[in-house]
Image: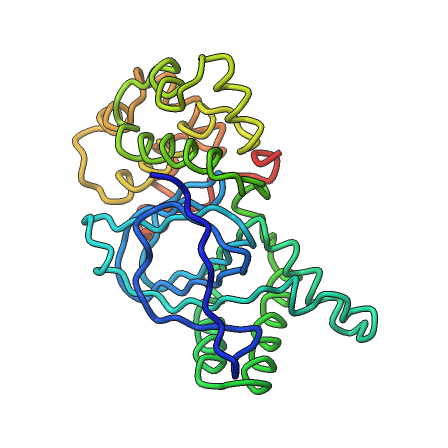
Length: 298
């Protein structure tokens, strides 16, 4: 299965902005439009560029132009997920316009920065979902003006919080590159709890181990095992917050770590605290904190 490049249908009266209230396609794909996704129902794993994390209802994501992405249902049934999605080809919509309307340059610049992918902070999801709903009910110029209000909200959020990108900006428009990354991503999601050898994933990509290492880092800006460890730590956070485990060591082994020493080291490096400290700080609140810092993407 390859990452498919999709075309978003535009109605004549909508021009720049399209909405779809639907469930996600079950494969890694990209399109030239930026996509703003409000998860209304369903849970699973999201792949956005080189970033992997669980998703749940009440979350909003910005997926960049041509950024590979996949929202896969935890129960295997994509129709159990419902999303309100906004699509805009911001490069077409704002191409050259800031030269004549410099007031819009801040909008154009934010949308270009958001091509790395963003998740709206939980404290602002209610405001953002209301703005998306308002835009969805409009057409033509009214829809475009409502969209500008939504972007204005995002710009205000960025000024108030340390809003880090989810991924590097990846250039994977080639179907061959997309196909290989999709195969590796899917294998990792299905086998993160196993002992994955470099030779195994290189074989999936039809490459030698050395060639695969260079290839994966070129297109994701991460080493494969850095990507895999990020995925495993995310899964460990889910398990730790669920409380459904006999010991912390069992969480380490269930998430693919060969021993607790490695698990504790990787966990501390990712979150700045031990698993025990994480449980004490966040288990009661029941939330997963942001694992990655900005330097992880470059």
